[in-house]
Length: 344
Ligand code: SF4
Image (cartoon, rainbow, N blue to C red):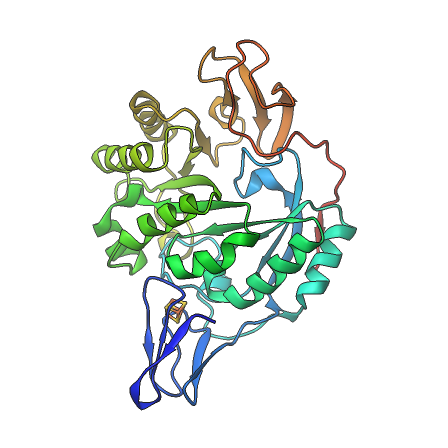
């Protein structure tokens, strides 16, 4: 899907902002899309590397069906080369592998284990677009919702195709969106596709939550954070949930250090003072700012501990029970009627 035939048997892939031009026999930057005689093929269709049912909080999606269980699926491949990737075994694999699944099987197992939706995640879902698209359509027909956890590099034309089946997206920004950080640590030379992607999601009414991986020393500048937050407020509004994630050493940055909680707190303070209403601190289990507070009167609306919801105080019509402020939440709290499950 989503490619253009060019002269000399070459093709241009229009799935992500890289827009690779691929010669006959060649593969795109993600290594999972191949030009075979002038046609572009996905090499990972139905080749899953994970199928897990676990809490929606883990995506993270804090404002969508709180308490729900959700299926997470992935393949191999990625259009980024993050040196700190915590799913690098999948995302950076040079080899194509995976267990055979059909979209129908993904939906059937999801329903069997009580998942309310499907998240396309772990590696970048853009690179398995065709399987995601087919699964999302069938999932929606079966009453399940669809969400993506993405680096935000999908093109606007790809968003347009997927949008009718998509409820929400978790968009993972890294290093406060700093371009030099993207160049040096992620092999990404242009961050503008991420902003175009966010605007396209908004145009289609997809619910957005944004994460920002704060990498100590290299991707933790408060000036960058201020630029990012003011762009979000101006273009998406102050109600977008914003998660400041603690960096954990992994892959080629295994020797780097975890983000100090004080650094995350400085970020939290800036984001709140600038006007974002729902700011969270992630990857610090038990931290008070993994809970949701009413932006008007300050009471705890959703108290979390790690991936668990331990208290839920939002009315059925999504208001604060004390002051009546409207809270942006899709769906209502669902007590766990799903089962942790892994098919691998
Ligand atoms: S999805 Fe893969 S082949 Fe297509 S533009 Fe992105 S990196 Fe290139």
